[in-house]
Image (cartoon, rainbow, N blue to C red; front, side):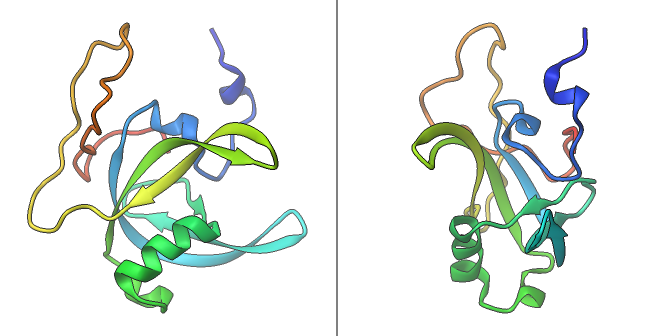
Length: 133
């Protein structure tokens, strides 16, 4: 069966690409691109095809951790996770990111897909995990 999200593929990562899990990534580079009529910055990750369109919230997290210069973000690590956010008065799922703790690996938590995820924060998958973007 085809999913709606698969019927309209995107060059950019969406929250649904995370399948409800956190994912640890390493930044490859940041590139300015025109999306529609607007110029936006897109963060690309090592080993991933889709980039993440950088919004102010996620950009602030990276800038506070790794500095103001996009070039300083290369090889920096982040954890992508799905989160419900308010967008113009409508609740929707979006990708947020956080900085992983230094000095310890973060692994994906295993749970039964038929039951809801645990209420505790699940660690992200290793950098070489297989996610669809």
